[in-house]
Every structure is written in structure tokens, then in C-alpha cells.
Image: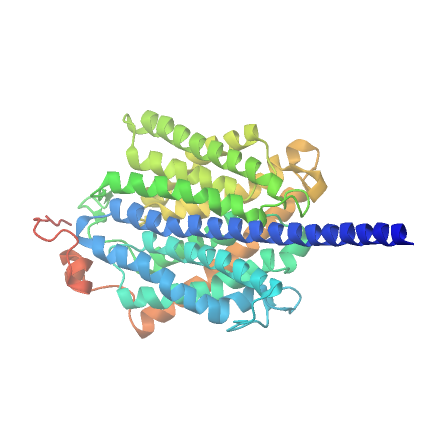
Length: 453
């Protein structure tokens, strides 16, 4: 009898240890997932500094304070409105056939438990994406936009434009149900910001002296060189660094759980394809601009690196390293063509090339899924891997739908702001520079800054 009791005690002890170990492993896995998503969010947050430096470096010294302020405040305002409205529209209960989320507004669960931990880690990761979409716009509208008007439209983008199109793709909306694939946001983040940037630049008009009509009726396009290329280069490198969180942490977890591309095991491949595409984009932009302009153009090379990053953001989890290099090479050439076309043919003044990098290459990256995608276990099979035109067709539909939404609503928004509060500073304020006219604070106090048309 005593032996039976001893055996029973040992069995119970082993069972308890087994249950405890299982529970401990689950808790450890959850903790690792939280930590990885938190690290990813921090990396994406660092991209705000990258955008600030890129935009500041590629524009004139007299507007450096203004651009820096915009990149600081679009996140601060954006975080609040995304908490209040954006999250609910993006991830709330689906309604209207997959068009919009309808609950979780002002959502702040206070209890400390696993379920609410999932909410907080997801919200923190998503808010930095919302800020990225909004900050893209500031570059294309730099050097002539009223600061108060900027704050109005950046709030609207974070609270309304970005979340609704995000719901379609990432919130279980109609494009997700259709099979549209955008792993980390070539369309959801970058093309949305890029389309808004294009509409804003069109409504705002070019900077004074950018397009000068001569006596013969021909229009001369004047370049306004950026005042600090090292700033721009440092900003691009910060963006490159942050992009490993942007793409890598979009797996959502760090552990082996999940399935297919939505697994911690895919972090390595995502990081490799991201690295290779960005590098290839910089290389092709350098070589192509060197041939075209007879000099290795610094700003084009930097934008080529960003073009490779934007282009790989959608397909990074479903393409091979070799395909990522091809995508990067094409994106680097595409961005040079696009910058020249938008500036000299369309006559749209985009001081930093934001539309070309984020809209044009965002669309290209979205379509790349349907061409080079090779993840049949996740239902993604591109044209070059025997998938036919099915996935490519879905990607085209998604790119057009999100583009139409972002462009039309942004255009209406900018016209309304222009009519109600004004969108552009006065010619005198623009000539003096927005640092003094809008903020009364020079970025380079004590230095003589020469301003020109």
C-alpha cells in the first residue's frame, strides 16, 4: 500500500511539474512575442528621426526648424488621434462588408492579463506605422505649408485615411478576404502616404521660383539643392536601421507559433530580403543616375536605397533573396525616372522625392508580390512561379482601391483646409523662411543664411 502511495505521489509530482513547465513555456513564449514586437516598434519609431533628417537635409537651411517640428508633432498628435479613433476604425468590429471597424474607440483596458497584453503590444506596434504614413506627406509639402494646417491634415490622416484603408488589408476587411497580400505596408503605409503627398503638393503648388516661364514661353525648372546631404544620408541610414523592425516585426511574433510566413522563423528571411533589396536599390540608383547625369548623384542614390526598402516591404516574406535583389534593382531605377518625370514633366514640386519613393515604389512593391511571390502554403503564388495572373490581379485591385481612397479623400481634405484656414504661407513668409515666419526660431542661429528664389 505504501509503495502504491509513493508511486502515486511521484506521478502527481511529475504531472504537476509537466503542467507547470507547459504553463511556463507558454508564458515565456508570450513574453518573447511581446518583447520582439516592442523592439520592432521602437525600431520603427526611430524612423521618425530618420524622416526628420532626410527631409531637413534635402531642403533649404531656412526651413530646418519647421521641418523638424513637423516630424516631431505629427507623431505626438497622431498617437493621440490613433488611440481615440484610428485603432477602432482599423481593427474594430468589421462592418459594411469589410469597409470599416466600428468599436474599440478610446479603448484602454486597465486589467493586467494576457488578453489586454495582446492589445497593448498590438496598439503600440501599429501606432508607429500610422505615424510613418502621416510623416511621408511633410516632405512633399515642405517649405511652403502653414504649420497649423499641417497639424490639421496630419491628424486626419492618422485618425481616418490610413486606418480605414488599413482595415481593408490588415483589419480583416474586404481586401484581406479577397487574398490581397501586403506583409508590412508597401500599400497600406507607403502608397497611402505617397498619394496624400501627391495631392497635397498639387493643391499647394510649387515653391516660388521653382518653375520659371521665360520670354519664349518655355518653362525652366530650377533645382533647390538640399543644404545638408550628410543629414540626409544619416537619416536614410536610420530609416534603413528602423526598417528591420518595420518588416521583421510584422511577423507579429518571435516564437515558432503561427504558421507559414506568420512565424518567428520567418524573421530571418524577412531581414535578409529587406537588406538585399535596399542595397540593390542604392546600387542601381547610383549607377543609373551616374549614367544619366554624368555624376554619381547623392540624393538619387539615397532615394534609391529608400525605394528598395519600400519596394520590398510588401513581398519581403514571400520572395527569395535573389528575387529581392531584382526588386531592389528595379525600384532604384524606377525612382530616378519617377523623380525626373514628376518634377520636369508633371511640374509637381516634391522637394524630397516623397511621391516617387513612397507612392510609385509602393505600388511597384505591391505588384511585385503577384510577380515574384512564392509562398503557396500561404496562398501567395506569383506569375513567375506558376501562379498565373490570379495573385497579380488581386494586387492590382488592391493598389487601385487604396490609391483611389487615399487620393480622393486627401484631395478633398486639402481643398477644405485651403478654403477654411489656408494651406500655404504668404510669399513673403516663404522667402524669409518658415523657421522665422512660423516659429521665430532659426535652426542655425549665428550663421548667415543666404536665401534665394
